[in-house]
Image (cartoon, rainbow, N blue to C red):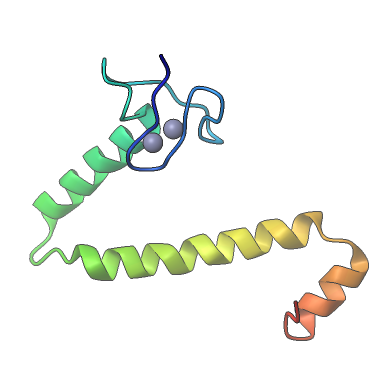
Length: 89
Ligand SMILES: [Zn+2]
Ligand SMILES: [Zn+2]
């Protein structure tokens, strides 16, 4: 039986891009997400007033930027021009 990570939805057949492994018997938490949770816990402990809502918002922006940059790398010259002109889809 193969599970699905309850945080990122990866599975045996569709692992995270970085490559991940199950961290428990239930197979609902992968090593990639466990690492993130540990980092978040560390972060919260170190903060004066940790706000996971603000953190999530900022992370989403960074994620979208990264995705856009990735898209530019694989885009054809025409697509780059379209993106540069305002990103019409
Ligand atoms: Zn995961
Ligand atoms: Zn994973």
